Picture 1 (cartoon, rainbow, N blue to C red):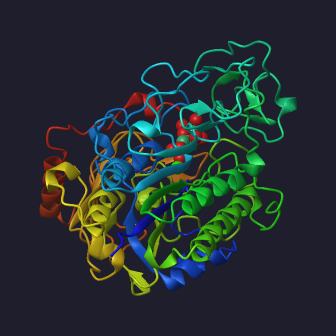
Picture 2: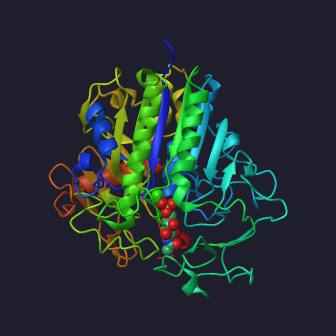
Picture 3: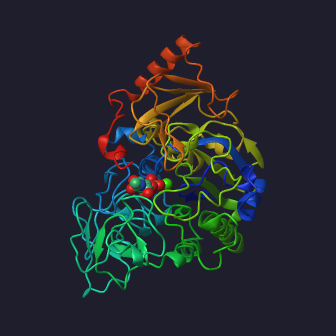
Length: 496
Ligand code: NG6
Ligand code: CA
């Protein structure tokens, strides 16, 4: 039988409570709700981190992020953090004859020192397993605001070269910044990071000059990525393929296509979630129209939990109303609490799975070993790093999943979940990011929660369960092995 195709659709900062199929009602998500009705809806699937770069690093490499000291939120010109010889999901599948593509948000670094935005960008996704790559380098709030097609900035005019600088004062006096020219902003910044170079009326993080013809239009970004994703599928329908379709929504700045602007009463965050839902529906319909729905496994999930104000005044707080982006979970993006890393996950594969719900414990680090198994590849287990074969979990025949997994909040502060227990070791730092209303999980006392009885992590029962605290602390240390817990990286935490 032909090996299955895989598509991972990865949202950016979508929370456990954002979708109607996860108990919400404030934002129309008909396509994802339909996908959940026909597929398998997971209630205990975890990204490995509460921020993007580390999560995505794990998803692709099968390795926990804290094992790589560079797996922290990256600037827009940071070097690639996946080694060229490191095993990845796409490199593994490519060896087995798959066509592989990444379309959308990358944020795992490019180049090996200074990125040559005006020449060949190496290393890039093409060097870590992808045959095709059409990406934004980092995030939509960071410069350069251009698409990278393979090794080249798309539509770059050689007479208008790009220069990028992070940190310090504006090195390009001719280029306006949000700090110096707030009157030029269409969307005000809410912190002191999102006010550097103004691109399309929005202050970004970082300074950038040049590349006018190559500059993306935020409002059409979803159409641009969708077109590339569909084209890859159509072009590869005769052979097995892996598509990593990394959506940019609902990360800031939230700028929906005019077709979606004002479509919800939740402001731009609601509108871009509606747009995201539409993109998912388009991919599913495209698979059907190409006759690929029977043999393609589509996984929809998110890289980390939700945040409302993440740098711009975009009404996300005032218009949120009763909507709870993290659902019943405590915390959100950046947090060691479950709201940081427990995310929606839907697996859709008609004819391959029984529709329903799964409370199996699953980590996004497991795609590597699981897809390999589903494609019947024989690779020694030690080459899978932290990735476990959860193929039966993805198809729904195993509803238990992992015995334990590790997640991290910002600053590589690790947390272990074993069965229903969650143990958060003592950590210094603010208890809450007040401007975001997000509880971080920092506490000088150990925290232990029984997730079966207390999904909202309201009752710390460490004091009454000292043996469990000792056992879980020992488990976490043993998983860390030679990789000491990072925990207090000043670079990551200082921006808050
Ligand atoms: C943070 C940014 C935040 C967002 C995040 C990355 C500040 C104060 N905050 O450093 O706005 O860009 O990085 O998000 O600069 S992620 O989803 O890609 O991890
Ligand atoms: Ca993210």
